[in-house]
Amino acid sequence: MQKTTKFTGQTIIVTGSNVGLGLEAARHFVRLDASKVILAVRTIKKGEAAAASIEETTGHKGVVEVWELDLCKSESVQKFASRVDTLDRLDVFMANAGIMAKTFTKVEGNESQITVNVINTMLLGIMVLPALRASAIKYNKPGVLSFTGSFVHYVTEFPERNAPNIFEDLADEGKARMADRYNVSKMMELLAVRELATKMTESKKDGQVIISVANPGWVKANMGSGEKSGLFTAFGRRFIARETEVGSRTLVHAAEGDPETHGQYLSDCEIGEVSSFVYSDAGAKAQKKVWGELSQVPDTMSMQQSSGTPNVGQQSQMSSSNGQRAEDTIRECEMQFEAALSKLRQSRSEAIITGKKLAYYETSFNNLQKVFRAMKKEKEEQEKELNDLKQAYGELLVEYRRVQLQNQAR
Image 1 (spheres, rainbow, N blue to C red):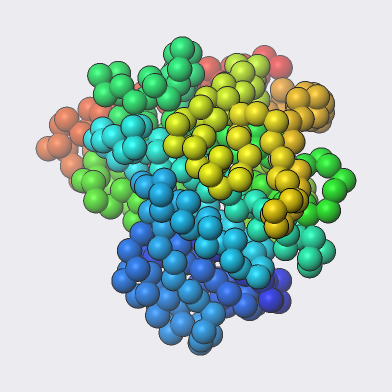
Image 2: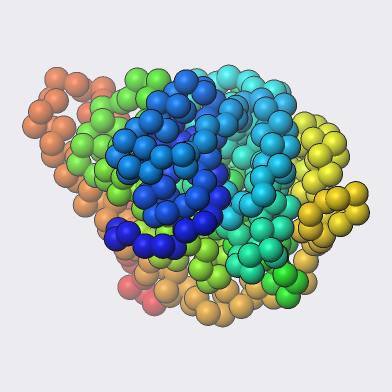
């Protein structure tokens, strides 16, 4: 990535930026001449160490600020959003923070990954929209709100969508499928962001905000570092994962705010393809359901009311009265949503979608084959782990062949 002036004068916030993708993205933003880069971190001391690292490697002093944010606590989210309102300018908000957990833990009434990766992440994104819109109007350029997503949304069937209440089902420890929980959380985040994007604009009003999801790929980041990795994960990182700095470039690409990226899933610094489920009628139904239920989460509702931000499940607008900085931030656009969905289906034929999916399975199959061979050679004694890998290998091969046959039939 060459040095540009793309972010000159801009104020950028990156959550989860003391390590991993967030840190490397923040480092890029500083190097690319941003005027202010705010590291939103849970532990100030670690954030200060990250800021020192950025200053040392870029030579830019006085650009980085460290703000406290704990996405496990709704009170912290509210305080952070209130502090954002004091900024003179906000051009880009990168909602990058997230957690991966193998064990079931409740945080504020919901399983921890659902609280952090879905509920409080979406709430904070909505709460910073007024600041993004105000700067977009003032500086005559779109603001950017981007969420760090993941390709793992491809590998979940998201069966919880069929429960009477998705969030209640996910909060039931007795039903928890923790091996799939992170995947489910990223699927729910993707669906919620897509719904938010459809409600945000297509309006011709000033104050446009580009909303997207950026997939950094499989990177050697610190997420889940507190958990013991399985042999499959360890070897996958060895053979497949990209360096964290390389993955962070996808976040920088999203921050550029190309209007064509609005509402899109970005992968490898271009508009990518979401899973076929997301495009399907079942996916559209799940998207509406996730969005509707999100608005009923108690902390979400009460915080929106106290902060003056819109209820995500109802007709939403930002009033310009009482000093609020923008109006009509989010509007209910059911007809626009249907029109956009219809246009998407017309422009992307099922054959193209299937072809993309086939390529995904083909790449995954080849990568798994490499990992399998290495494990068989080096870790023969690890029978249990090896059997787990064989099962995953076999399941993916069956799925790959099924999709291949479907594609050939076309």
